Image 1: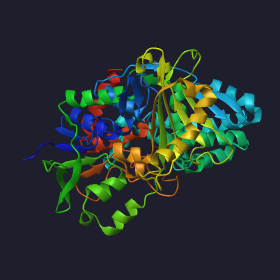
Image 2 (image 1 turned 90 degrees about the vertical axis):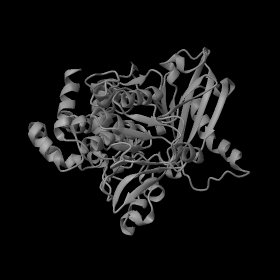
Image 3 (image 1 turned 180 degrees about the vertical axis):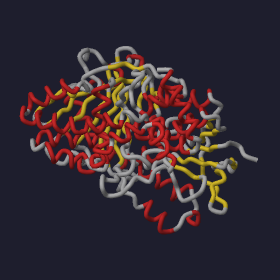
Length: 505
């Protein structure tokens, strides 16, 4: 007896995307979530009337039917759109030498750079144009049409032959790092630091480690589409995916912690839950990280030692310190929603040096009680050395100090405004997100190794999420869910869904 056609472990964006799409294709899907709230790293939570994002806070294209954002394509396919509020500038970058607004509009962005360094702005335009040529080639092949097996070749040649042919001159950039493209055009040190920062915000790595298509897509989308924030926060996106999953016949089980993936004769046959219940299906998709999947969910004998060890040695992006605040909003009428603060000229990837700030109640006032704002700030922090001991609370406060100082660059009297304060550490990440060492994903630098895709050596076992695709953001994990789901169905089914989605724009 089979309980489902597909079992999905984890309700992060990758797992929900794969599950909702497979339900849309008519498969019987069960998504098992360990916690009482779906969404993984993208879940929202409420404290004293303040609605907090736990992770992602920057989105683009949600309100644009023609956006190439993989998440937007999935929401259209499962017929569950998300309302969003467009805005520009997308944020402000606070460097030690001054603050600059960062626009999605390419012309205004270059004008901003020109005010700092006219020569650098000209160099940046050449860099940008090269990457936008790559974007133009990629944008003619919708992510919703792609898959991760040999049939992709047939799909590209039969349905997207001309766009594929136009990508041939871009093969070098498809395989290049952003650093390689930058080295061809940009000498200005300020612009090089700006590009490094944008890469770091996108992938967790600087330009030398970030793949060029990732930044090409980011530049193309924020200039050609819209930057917007979902009404209701990141939880609204999660709920839309859950609605789509259930509307098309799938099922989400909360408080259903998967303890083991069941394997017989080299094939995945189901999962065992912590309470002892077993669920059976011929396909199992893990939305857990590569480290948690191979070290916690599988038995050592399920994988060849060499393969397992190599996978577990995949480098990680550090974990984070998080600060969630509820503050009084009086006198802050001109406050904007996104800020990045670089404290000093040391390495931007140094823990505590680069701080990301999101104040989403600027766009959606319902996220906070009347007269208040909700604030989310975070910065890199290694997992090593963290323990819940007598010094834990003191260390939390010490490591959160760079976040408070960053916020004071935006709101000078911040500390006098706080009505609710929550500090999260790498241990918080590891516990609530069920993530190995609290990491946000793999740190596979461009040119060093290939991302492992959705396939595993075990028949019937697939993987989605940030350990399978370049980038640690929502578009990357949504794309991983698309590729996995499409790999499990006939190409004709995908073609029909793509056609329907385009017709419904």
